[in-house]
Structure formats: structure tokens, C-alpha cells
Length: 475
Image 1 (cartoon, rainbow, N blue to C red):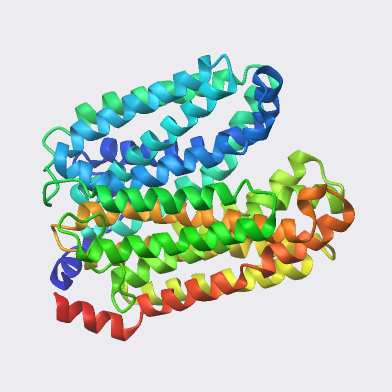
Image 2: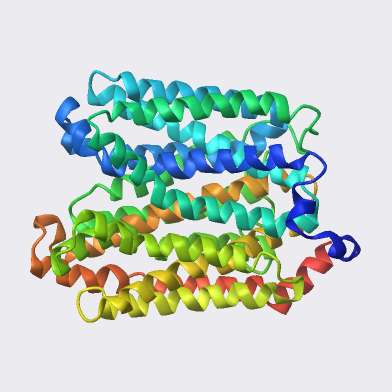
């Protein structure tokens, strides 16, 4: 592995990344990640319009929750399905399923079919994004991985801004259904391009079979977290989150003893690079959700901002994420540990700043906190993913790489539910007033600082000498 890294040092530029026919495949991977990230958020700004046409306001939080449930389960199984059916066929089929889900929501005469379409979109986008990560593992030499993952990280950051923006433009034009026709066209383009660009791609190594038991327990765990996200009673919500996290831990225990595996064998061992990396991804993502979910409402209530200007403030996170990811894309391997650890420190620092200044004081501090939040992931995410991939065996690389998407979105669901419960404890669910917004501006961020500390601890373990030594012994 070290020899391969050294061999690539002389040709690690962007030109080399996109040479030898890799540009179209690189674009396909970015499109797959975009479909998952943007479609997850596009309903944030169209739901009032959907409600006016279809009704069912009580269930509208499931426009996101239902998508995430499907995406998490699909992302977890993407690596195994790529092994069973081959990357080309699996990717093309996932694109067609995504198109069908978008059409379901676009033509829905009632909220039931609309939400069913969202679940189908979530499952298919989880597969699309998961298969895209498998494609990275199969199609790109290791010397390009830092730039590929920096680009993927940038796509995620841009999508958090453009997803709601696209939805808002269609809603303002009185044509919310057009959002789903637009994504249906993109999904069809992905499917057709996959058939063409992935010809000749090797079938990922791995065993036969589908881990039904692990998927069933995972469904229960993710379902508990998703339900918690829509429960108004805070202590019930926290109990469901705790039950969901416990079930996710049970998945690791079952998987460690299973003949047909869902995750790499090191996934539950925090002493290893894979286990520490997955843990860092889960808890750091969970700690970051409050800013995007509750930030706009708090800014509009306490600072008198319009929805548009509040969106610009929240967008600082995405801008910083993208800029940071590209800024470190070219650093040498010996600096990876530094940037991963700096990212963990930035996350904790951002939450401390937001706890103190989100509800009052200079707006500049809110911008600083949001920028540090985005930079935390821009600095660290690509290097964490690359370290996990490098530690995986050839037989486990497909399932292990694709699982990073599911872990990220599971952490997002858990974090949104925990932030929601903290907000509801201080009265947010009873109505948005200056008093409840002021209290939420503190506790939404203070409540997840422990999660950020856990994620930071795992990130330091990921880059620590003990993990490196253990990886060498296992290799």
C-alpha cells in the first residue's frame, strides 16, 4: 500500500484524475451523490404548496423522514447488492427505481401516494449513492482518492443549499410537481449513463447471500429514530432515539457472528480504523444537525430575518464545507491525521460558539460558528473515508465503502431527533415564540456537544498510533 502511494506522488493533480477516460465516470459518481443529497432536502421549501394541494399536514415531516429511512436501509445494502448483481446492472436499475419514485410523487393525487413516492426515492437514491461509492473503490487508483472524496464532500455541501433553493423556485412558480419531474429526468440520465460508462467494470468481491436478519434489526432501529423525529413529547422521543441507537449496536453484534455479513468484520471494533472511522462519522454527523434544522426558525424569530436571509446565513456551513474540502484535497498523507483532528476540534468549537451566540449578540459569531461547522467536515471527511477504504480487504471494500453513506444518514436522523427532543423540552413544539426560540437557541446546540466529543474521541482513535499498529498487524 505504501509503495502504491509513493508511486502516485508524481501524478496527483486534477488533470491526472480526469485523464484516461475517468472524467465521465467521475461525473457519474458526482451525479449519483447529488441525487441522494439534493432529493433528501428538496421538499423543505415545497411542503406548504404540497399541503395546499394534497392536505395531510400531520404527516409532512415524513417527506424527509420517509426518504431517510429508505436511503439508510438501501445504503447499508448497496455494497452487498453490487456484489450480487454487478455494479453496472445494479446502478442502472437503481436509477430507474428512482425515476419511478419521482413520478409517483409528481402525479400523486393524495398525500399517501406522495409519501410512498418519497420512500421509494429514498431507497433508490440510497442505492444510487451507495453504488457510486462502490464505483470509487473499483474505478479510481488510490492516488486520486483524496480529490474524489473532496469532490463528493463538495457535492454534499452544495446540495444542502441548492436542494431547498430548487424546491423554492418551483414552489414560487406554483409548480411544485415540476421538482420531481426534474429529478426523474436526472435519475433516467444516471441509469442510461451507468449502462454506458460502467461497461467492463469488475464485479466487487464478496460472498453470496443477503443479510436479512441484520437488515430487519436495522429497519427497526432506523424506524425508531425516524418516529422519534416526529414525536412531539420530548421524553418519548429521547427514549425512541435511545432504543434506536441500541438496536443499531445490536446490528453490529449480530453481524459480527453472521455467516452473510452486512458490514466489514471490524465495523464494531473501536480499536480498528474501520470501527473508529464509522463511529466518528456517525456521532459527528449527529452533532451537526441542529444548525440546519432549527437555525432558520431561530434567526427569523429572534433576529427578524426573512426566510431568504436566514437561508443565506445557514448556507455559510455549506460554503465553508466545500471550500475546506478542496483546500485540503492536495495535502500529503502525513498531514491527514492533523486535518481529521482539526475537523473534530472545529466541530466542538462551533457548537460552543453557536450555544453562546445563536440567540443574541453579534451575527458575526453565528457566521463564524456556521463556518467552523462546515469546515469541520470539509477538513476531515475525505481523509476519514480514505482511511477506512484503505483498511478494508478486497472482499469487504464494496460493502464497507458504500456503508459510509448509510452511516452518515443514520447519524443525521439520530441528530435531528435528539435536537428536536431538546427543542421540545423547552417548549418549541407548543409554538414558536421569542421565549421558546431563545431557549432552543441554547439547548439545541448544547445538548449535542457530548455527541461531538464522542465523535472527536473516535476521530482521534482513527488517526492514533494504536489504530495504525493494529491495522498493520491485521494486514
